[in-house]
Amino acid sequence: MKTTREAVPDQPAPAPIAVRGLRTVAAVSGKGGVGKTNLMANLAIASASLGARVLLVDGDLGLANVDVLLGLSPEQSLADVLEGRCSLDEALVAGPRGIHVLPAASARQDLAALDGAPLSGLRELLRRSARDYDLVLIDAGAGIGPTPLGLAVGCDPVLVVTTPEPISLADAYATLKVVHQTAPGSRLELVVNSVRDETEARRVHAQLERVTRRFLGLEIGFRGHLPHDPRLVEAVRSQQAVVEAFPNSAVARRMASLAAGLLRESRSGPRAMEAGRDRRPPAGAAR
Ligand SMILES: Nc1ncnc2c1ncn2[C@@H]1O[C@H](COP(=O)(O)OP(=O)(O)OP(=O)(O)O)[C@@H](O)[C@H]1O
Ligand SMILES: [Mg+2]
Image (cartoon, rainbow, N blue to C red; front, side):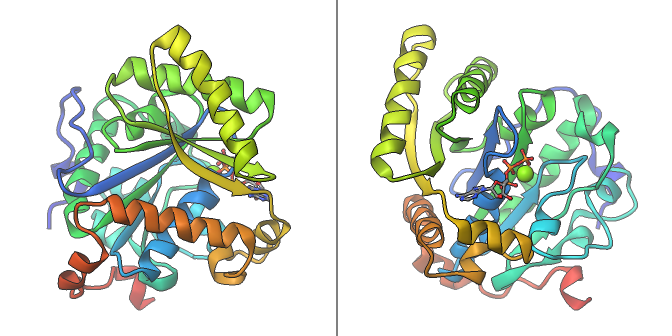
């Protein structure tokens, strides 16, 4: 197996992460703390429960989120991959329902602003390993810096997560604008988190889309809503995904429905996935 140093090409032009026929979905947001990590971790687990082979990538490269949320204790991280100490496969750990998690490093300011050739190298690694999965979910982190943007470009769809709060919405607009300008043609979809109901979420979507249409000529899809739910907070405190800790909670049911929607749209739907059950577990699974 190639080491990362061999695998990282010294070229600035990033190739799209998405591979035809596969779903590589990224979550971004302008404002932090709006629910990206919970969304992607729960989507991953719910999708795996439906039979999908799922890779969950913690793209918040300098501030690990996913392993903390899921109570995992990875020995290696993307930092080791990027610095050539292990392969991507060796850095994977097994999460709930057999998902594979590619953990990020913690407190690595340098990785938080990954750019240029190392970012291209990471994209290439992800693009290659995506072939082993039905669904690759990338928690790309907050903000409009090069790292979240570079991870999101080429994913389909790019989920922009927001809450109904004005600051979150203003930052969601900025994110939509920057992704659209960086990669015109990206399929951008809104997930509105922490709402009372779907009506509120659709109102938020309509409000934002009025502005993106007017100033950017951009339509945004509506991926769905997630209710504000104290069960999610409880699950986070116990380092579990809410779909595992409280599968019947309102938010867990919405997560499951969003996962089913994504898989339904996938060209390799859950039934087609049955053929590929024999993928070996990641190195971390044996720990
Ligand atoms: N639907 C929800 N209901 C209740 N609380 C929520 C909900 N979604 C998110 N939260 C709260 O927001 C917190 C932050 O969520 P999360 O870590 O998923 O956000 P994030 O966008 O990944 O943040 P960051 O930008 O810092 O990575 C959660 O720990 C939880 O307390
Ligand atoms: Mg996060």
